[in-house]
Image 1 (spheres, helix red, strand yellow):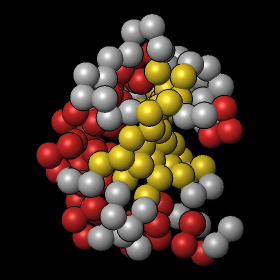
Image 2 (cartoon, one colour):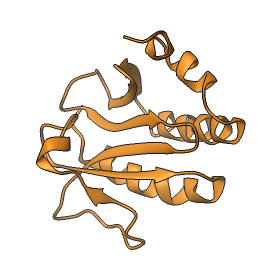
Image 3 (tube, helix red, strand yellow):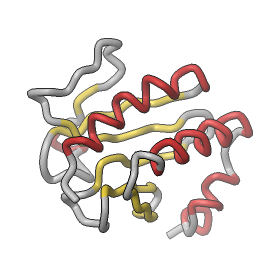
Image 4 (tube, one colour):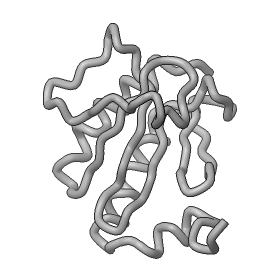
Amino acid sequence: MPEDYQSWQKMLAGIDENLKDIVKDIEVRVIGLGGVKSKLIGRYYGYYKGSPSTKSLFVVFLLTKKALRIRIRVDRNTFKDPKKWTGAATIFDLWFFKQGQEQEFEITNRDQIDYAMELIQQSYEVSST
């Protein structure tokens, strides 16, 4: 594993300052959902509803220099994305979620945080503990 991927802090060090603030804000909000645990998964950072397991994983962050890419688990029967930010991952991209449908979107500015949290909240609600 490259040294930059050995900790979340090292990964955060390599991104734009503006994006660091966005990531910190959204992390606080995700943890504020209640009972959330987190851990590094290779070059990604996963958040779990309760004890870490494939069933409790509900959101995964991937950092790029200028954007925070977010993967969430959704129930395709109830998931709502009126702004159409998300795209379904292809069968070859299903990395994290063994149940439900995997969706991905990215955020690049603070104005996107509230809607991103609406999408993440839906994933949190369908995840098991």
